[in-house]
Image (cartoon, rainbow, N blue to C red):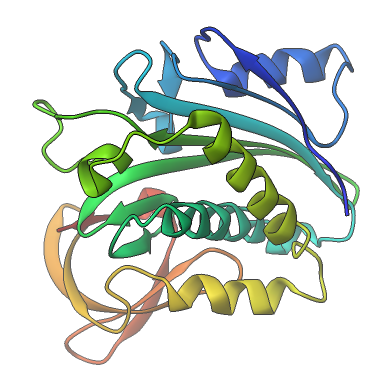
Length: 244
């Protein structure tokens, strides 16, 4: 089992960018990571902006090599990261947790965490920088009504060091499952926690609003939907938007 080597930063424009810059200099080892409570210019899936109040949100990034994972199962890294975060939040009694495809963690129907895994593939080796943004201490979200925080959900201000310790242990456990032999099991665990699994929900597809049932997320990361006429189709994140 590998270990994490983490550094706390007083502030960072982007913890993912911090690691990408070090990777360019060949100055990173698998398991290295950084975290801060003050990220000033974070970003998420498809260029979305991660907004957070200074000293109230956790930005955490981890560099990890995956040498026994076929690149076609690369979404396993997202699955492992999401499950690690979900378990950590559950350990701090955050209620009604689920995973919203492709990369968010919800409490109820409100976002509490976003995940961005940026991957490089060379031969069969995957180099991944896993970025995790978690709302920890925010008390209000005036401009983001669909967001929540650990504090709002639990009314407790937890120790950031204790939280990092739990998150680190869970990341080690779940990312160790990102292998060819365990990818299917990881995908199954991910689906068991999927937001609105086997339920109908509204989607925007090609500019039109349609209702569809969420069947599952495939091991390759595509979302399978079933429509009113029983037609089944699978989609990439950029092709579809969930309305809830």
